[in-house]
Image 1 (cartoon, rainbow, N blue to C red):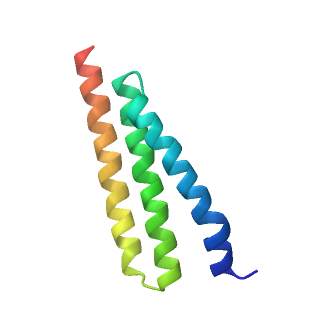
Image 2 (spheres, rainbow, N blue to C red; image 1 turned 90 degrees about the vertical axis):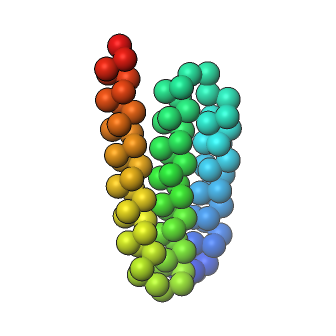
Length: 88
C-alpha cells in the first residue's frame, strides 16, 4: 500500500467521519462554549484536509494556507477565551 492509497482509504474517511461528528456537536452543543470548541475542531480538521490535499497534489503552497488558517483559528480561540474571562 503506497501513501496515496493510505490517504484515500484510511485518512480521508477518518477525517470525514470526524468532521460529521464535530458538525453535529456544533449544531446541537447545548452551550456556546461547546459550539466554539466544535468550531475550532472543524477548522483543525479542515487544516488536515488541506494538508492531505497538499500531499496528494504535490503543491507546497497549500501548506502555507493551512498554517495561516491555523494561526487565525488560534487567535479566534484566544479572543473568545479573553471575552469569557472579562464577562465573568
